[in-house]
Image (tube, rainbow, N blue to C red; front, side, top):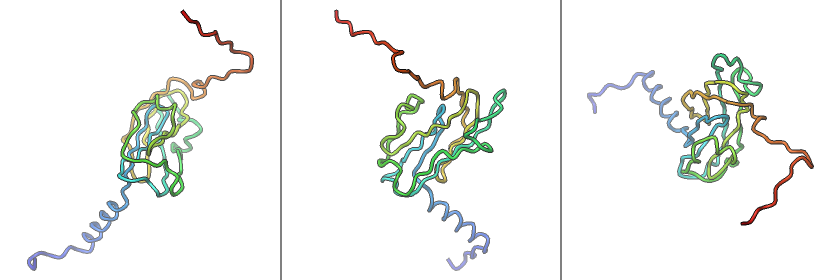
Length: 162
């Protein structure tokens, strides 16, 4: 050991910075899927800290804007105060926009982005974990996915029996 050189001050600083980055890693995985961002706790215990979720968006031509939720191309998709992220860990929802029917589960959340119809490149971030840039196509506006029925405008057929 006596024949080894001591690290320079800059090398020691780099090692300390890398160790600090490792110390603050969180167990989250995050990805965009359709008009949703999925945030999943893949850790081995419930998440009890605070958590911020962000999405960045780049419109793909001919789309020219990511809509009003993305001011400057960035959307604050959610903030969870200490201890408010859903309990549970180690399991993921089934990937796919059909999960939009349910927005949270055992250690995960799905956050709607409210993108209008168009083509986009989305990057999602939860804590210090970031998804790869993902191509997303939205066929209709989010409001087009909601059925509004006024009183007296819907009549259901009685159940038929053989």
